[in-house]
Length: 110
Image (cartoon, rainbow, N blue to C red):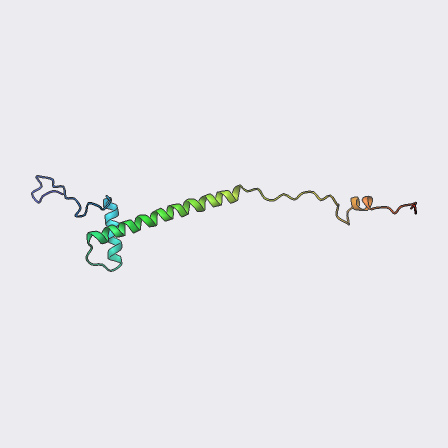
C-alpha cells in the first residue's frame, strides 16, 4: 500500500496471520458475494470464511465435473452386448425344417 504522498510503500499484513493468503480476485469476489447477501460491513473473519466457502464450492465442482466426465467416458467405452448366434434356428426358417427330428423307423423294445 502506498502512502498518500506516493513516496514510500507500506506493507500491511493481515490482522490475523493464521488466515491463508488470497488473491485480489478472491477478495473482490468474496466481498461482492457478501454484499449480495445483504452485508453492508465486511470484517476480516467473514471475508475469509466466504473465501473458504468459495474455494470449497470450486473444489467440489471440480471433483464432480471430473467424476462425471470419467463416468461418461467409462460408459461410452463399454461395448454393446453382442447377440450370440442361437444354436437352435428359428422355427419358421428352412434350416429348422431340415433339422427337424425325423421319427425313428425301427424302435427296439426289450
